[in-house]
Structures are given as C-alpha cells and as structure tokens.
Image (tube, rainbow, N blue to C red; front, top):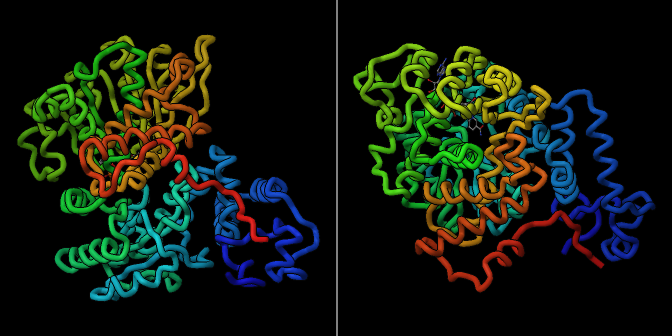
Amino acid sequence: MYRGVKILHDPVRNKGTAYTDAEREFLSLRGLLPPRVHSPAEQELRVLNNVRQKATDLERYLYLISLQDRNETLFYRVIMNHLEEMMPIIYTPTVGKACQEFQHIFRQPRGFYVSLQDKGEVKKILQNWPHKECKIIVVTDGERILGLGDLGADGMGIPIGKLSLYTACSGIHPTHCMPVMLDVGTNNESLLNDPLYNGLERRRVRGEQYDELVDEFVAAANELFPGVLIQLEDFGNMNAFRLLEKYRNQVCMFDDDIQGTGGVAMAGIIAALRITGAKLENQKFLFLGAGEAGIGIADVFVAALAEKGIPTDEARGHCWFVDSRGLVVHGRENLADHKKPYAHDHEYLDNFLDAVKALKPTAILGLSGQPQMFTKDVVEAMSEINQRPIIFALSNPTSKAECTAEQAYTWSDGRAIFASGSPFDPVKYNHQMFVPGQGNNAYIFPGVGLGAIVSRSRVVTDEMFLVAAHSLANQVTEHDLERGRVYPSLSRIREVSAKIAYDVARIVFDRGYSLTDEPDDLMTEIRDYMYQPVYPHYA
Ligand code: NAD
C-alpha cells in the first residue's frame, strides 16, 4: 500500500483530517495535514455548511463533485445522510444544468470515454480502467439528455450521477461502477461551434458504423467484466428501443428510461389501487406522450396483465396514447415502430380532452415533457368519470409537469390520486393534508440493479421490473396511503432497495437466470454486499 501525499490524492482511501494520529504516523502523513483530528461527523458538518452557503445549485453540484474527487467516503456519507436535500443537486434537475455547462465547468475527468476514434481498440482501452472489478456500467451516447436534447459528450454527467445514486440508494460499491460516454458525435450546433466542447468535432454517426461501435463496446465490456450489468441511459428514441431489443436476451442489460420508468409508475398504480380497491385488469390508461417513458410503462402493465392470464393483444387494448399529433390509432401515417403495438381501432382525435371523454380512462399519465396539458377541463372530466381519478403528471422538471399537485387536488375536489415526476410540497385542501408521491426512478433501478448483481443474473427481464413494482408498492405504508401518498418516503430508500433486490434476486434464482449458486441466506448476502460510507482503519 502506498503512503504519504499519494494516499491523500486517492479519493477511495483519502480520509482528510479524519486520519488518526497513529494512522498519520503509519502512513507518513505527519506534517501533511493540520494537527487536529476531526470525526467523520465533524467533516460532514463542514461539507453541509459549505454546500448550504453556495449561491446556486450549480455551485453546490460543483462543490459536491469536487468532494467526490477528493474523498469518496465523505461524499457518500453526506449524500446518504441528506438524500432528499442532495438528490436534486447530484441528479435531476441540477445535473441537467451541469451537462449544459459541462465544457465550461470541466475540471477533472470522471468516467470512461469510448469514441469513434477507438473503433477496433475498445477492449484495449477499457483495460485502462483503474478498478479491477466492474459490476455495473451506465452508458449513454448523449443524444437525449433528460428533456434537454442532444448534449453529445457533455452528457457524461448523467451516467456519473446515476451511478452515485446506485451507491447512495442501494449500496453498489463505488469502485464497481463505471460511467461510460459513447461519443459518436453531436448534432448540437452550438456545441460544435464551441472551442471548449470536449467531444468529437463531428456530426452524429448513424447506421453500420454506430452499430459496430456499440457491438464492440458491449462485447469488450463482457469479455473484461463477465456478466457486467449494462444500463442504457438517455439514448434517442431511434436507438433506445432498438438497442434494448437487440441485446436484452444476449447480455445483462436494461434501459432505465423505458423499463425503470415502467417499474416506478406501475408501483404507483398498484399502490393507488390499494386506495381505490379496484382491480388492475379493470384499468384503462390514457398516456399523454408516446416516447420511451410512456411505452415503457405500458409494457410493464402488459406484463402485469399477462400474469393474470390476459393475452398481450388484449392487455395492450387497456393502454391508449395521445402524442404530439393526437390519438395513436390504426392507420395513422408514419407511426414510429414503438407506437404501433398501441395503435388501436378508433376514430382519430386531435386533442387530449376529447380522448379523455371518448375513452373514459381510469388513469391519465403525463409523459410528454409539456407543461399544463392536464387542464382544469381534463381533471374535471376525469373526476366525472371516476370516483377516485388517478392523475400522474410525470414530466420533469417541475416546470414541465402536466399539472401541479394543487391543481389536481383542487380541480378534482380532493378526489384525485396524484403523483408527479418531480417533487411537490404537501397541499392543504378542505382542511385535509395531501402528500403527493414522487414517481422517481431512483425507487426502482437501484434495487433492481442490486438484485441482478448479487444474484449474478444473465439477463434483466420485464418481469423483474414488475416484481420490483409490486415490492415497492407493498412497502408503501397505510399511513402514506391515508395521506394520498403512493410512494414511500425517500428517507427509507436503502431498506426499500434491499427488499426490492431480494424480490428481484428470488426471480433470478427461481427462473434459472443466475450464473452462480443461490446463497444460503439471500437477504444476508444482499445486506453484506451493500456499501457503507465508513472509513477503513490503517494503523
Ligand atoms: P421522449 O422524448 O421519448 O417522449 C416524449 C413524447 O411526448 C413523444 O411521444 C412526443 O410525441 C410526446 N409529445 C411531445 N409534445 C406533445 C404534446 N404537445 N402533446 C402530446 N404529446 C407530446 O421522452 P421520454 O423519455 O418518454 O420522457 C417524457 C417525459 O417523461 C419527460 O419530461 C421526462 O422527464 C418524464 N419522465 C419521468 C419519469 C418519472 O417520473 N419517473 C421517468 C422518465 C421520464
């Protein structure tokens, strides 16, 4: 083991002022640190004071990322002990702002870049990764970063942030995580014209060359890190569905924008049905937005109805979509492939309110990225059709939500079961306090990932997301439901993720997907794996 200043510059081993006197002697650190030894709690306090004093969230983000580069243990201690406060900084919405500014705020590289220039040598360069074990890769090509469009190589902030959430929410060890940017160019003119842009100075490559690079990367990653879990993140529609279809049965891979969203929204629906007492097979969903998120939710719902013996075609008939051009129906021209399974026989309608009135859904789900599309008329129509209308305004960030929590409760006279993508404060209406649930994917992907990793699964299936959805919904307490809240408190996320991981791993072993033998005590195995942000002792 190395000593002296080198260990202070290693974020995995650095303890900063928390090295004890004995450790300072043993590691040749005397004189290199101020004399007073601080406890981790004191260090945490200093970080919190700093974060809270910053003027903007972007400055908070920069401070926290610098801390991650200096002292990973302290970074995770702060994030985990203050998850509700820190999550919007290290992930959406602030990470979006950080990606937009990436070329200007760049300080220290993090993650791994595979570009078109590396074609034919991907395996060779992957060997430069500093950690021996890699259990999970989050990869993007930067084409559709959050709702912000093509940010090219500057989208790297997303895999970095997502993997920080894996560690914080379900204890995947930081050194087992690899954020990857596949740089295939960008069509973002302002980036191409910016001399500080970090990515390739070229427009996006499509077709064969693109596919060959992705193939090479997936193969090389599996050769060097057998069975590694690969999560696709923020790919454009034209590649996301296609890549998932291509690889999902070959390697351990999923797409969080599609399947993770499916799992978290499904959990909210299952919990909502615990309030209404209605059955899943009697639900009719009307989606606003037929992109990765909407289709992903519908696919998980279809999997849920399949469990009840309902054939796929019939199950798809429970899901209707309105996109930017109106109701998705049979015969509509130029429908994208991913929408076709959900194009049903019906007269074409060009607006959402008419679709609500004609189809009489039990739930409306907003995944359009367009604010205020659930108008007063829409919510009132839903409340006429249903005693307890389910209204999920899932578009992010808060400014894009299809309606606010207050609007949903007020316009439905307190009857709506509401959830959103971004957090809303509790709402007081008619002397009653409503607590809106936040359908954050962070409730699902960390637990599914942990379950797949501990069980060494060969694949990630839709069934695993459905199981995760049931597991999450079952962990919503009666107290939560009484206040209209369909997701548990984020403060319980580690315990919730461990249970989801257990339920997912059970499926892996029961279905024979595992590359290893089942441990004697699965829950202990999961808990033992989970990383804790505690300093090692060196002396
Ligand atoms: P996407 O680009 O794949 O899909 C967007 C869809 O919205 C497209 O089908 C588009 O046709 C449709 N659309 C655009 N304008 C419309 C309009 N005026 N009326 C009707 N439809 C319209 O994006 P995505 O990944 O599916 O994400 C969509 C939204 O969902 C984003 O705001 C994202 O933040 C949110 N989201 C939320 C969660 C969550 O809450 N857990 C998870 C994933 C995505």
